[in-house]
Structure formats: C-alpha cells, structure tokens
Amino acid sequence: MSLRPTIETRRATPTMEGAGVKLHRAFGFADPSELDPFLLFDDFRGDRPQDFEAGFPWHPHRGIETITYVLAGTVDHADSLGNQGSLGAGSVQWMTAGSGILHQEMPHGNAKGQMHGFQLWANLPGSLKMTAPRYQDVAAADIPEVTDDDGTRVRVITGSFWGARGPVDGIAADPQYLDITVPAGRRKTFRVDTYRRAFAYVFEGAGAFADASRPQGVLLEKEVAGQEVNIRDMSGNRTLVRFGTGDEVTVQAGPEGIRFLLISGAPIDEPVAWHGPIVMNTRAELMQAFRELNNGTFIKPAH
Image 1 (tube, rainbow, N blue to C red):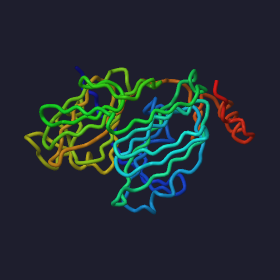
Image 2: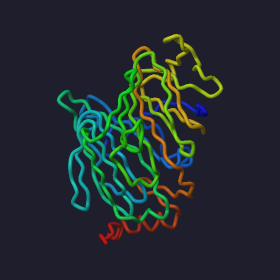
Image 3: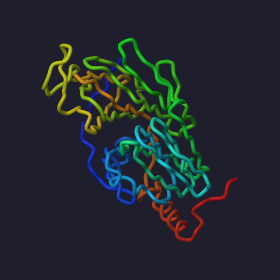
Image 4: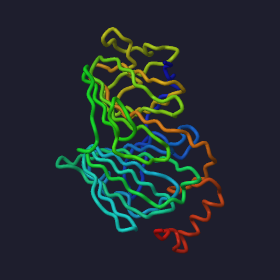
C-alpha cells in the first residue's frame, strides 16, 4: 500500500455561468492535463432563488460527458432530441454529449428555497467524441449506500467500492465517483486504483487528508482523537484536494465530521482543443464544430 501525497489544496472560486447562476468553480478552463480525464468541476448552491433560477438555457456540448449530482432542490432538463425530465435531491444525470447535443438545465430550490448540486465534465477520447449522445438518469433510491462499522457512509455513484457497484456504467474514463461521510474524530483510509488521477472535494465539515511526507496532517489548529488535524485548510467551504500517485487516500475527520466527494478516472492523455462547451482533439475539429453550429448541422441524425 502507498499513500497518495497531497499535491495541492485550494478553494473553489466564485464565478457566474448560464443566464446568471452564481456558483463556485474548483477547476476548469486552465490546464486540461492537471486532472485528466476531468476538465471542470462546479459547485452550485444557495438559498436565494434569484442567484440560480435563471439557470442554464439552451447551449451545445460536443466531445465530453457532463455529470450532474443534486443534493437539494431540483434541476429540470430538456434537450434537442426530445428528452426531458427532472433531477431530484440525491439523484444523478450522466450525459454523454458525444457528437453533439443542445440542452438546458434549470435549477429550482426546495421548499426552503435551497439548491445544491455539482457538475463535473469528463473528457472523451478521440475515438468516442463523435459517438451518439446518451443519457443515464439515476434516481436517489437507485444509488447504493454502504456503511462501515464506525459509521462511515459511502454513496457509490459509479465504480465499485466496499462490495457495492454504482448504477452508472459504460463511461469512457472508467471513473469512480463516491460521496463519503466520515464521522467526527474518525481516521479512514480509502483505496484508489494507482493508474487513476484522483481528487477530493470537501463540502461539509472539516478534517485533514494525510500527506505521504506528513502522514498525520499539518498546520495544526485543533487535536481530534489524538491526531493532528488541519481544520483551517480542509474545511467544508468548498476545498479541492489534488492527489499524486499511490493506491490509498487517508482522511482524519474533524470535530463535526467531514463529507467530501472522492473522484478518480483513467487519464486519456490526448491533445485537447477546447472552447466553451465543446472539447475536441484539434483546432480544426473545434472550428468544424462551430461551423456546424452556425449552419445547422451540429446535431447528427441517429444511426
């Protein structure tokens, strides 16, 4: 077993997307090799409907997969192929844009006006960029949750973990997408396949991820269960943690526990030509996509 070192921790930054949705971006539109095969990760949450209900009106995608995970509120969606539906709390939509699709996503608050969700973009290899679009809509009740003896809970959205398999399948990046809750004061280790790039995103509670060179945690502010805990830099206000190579990740939960996403996938390691919601391998392919958007041939007929 080898502990993955912590390469970097950073806060998600405020930004605005769609028709005026206020959100926080953990990464995206920078170096696409940083977390290959993942391109972008957004955290959209709030309790003021005016901050998110303008939504994400009709827009195109090609060459990627978008993964939307809703924790509170709902997201209504529709596309140019006639698909439509609503994602409720705890549900997931994994959309393979492939050769191209136009769609819209409109978030709505719950009875208290609260909305919370995440969107992750995963790249497609060149051989699959022009594949037929595909949706996988998964209800909350269909996502397995496993609980360890110490109360640690893991929702398995995709991949296999602790004997459970997530319902989303057939994804090019062969990802593992886990929603993990570790109780207060607990220290827990999770296996991550060595060949995958991995990151964690902390969104509730606090704690510290052990580093290979400082396995007990650093930058002390408190002591929890006799372990050093980096409360300040690993709190739940939208912290991204990037890991190096290894086959396990260890976290020490703080006094309120910690909840985070642990996401990993196999690198594609191909050239990236990227503008807005379209990601191809070459500039020529990118320009072709925008020409097709302009001349009305972007959406390909079903085979």
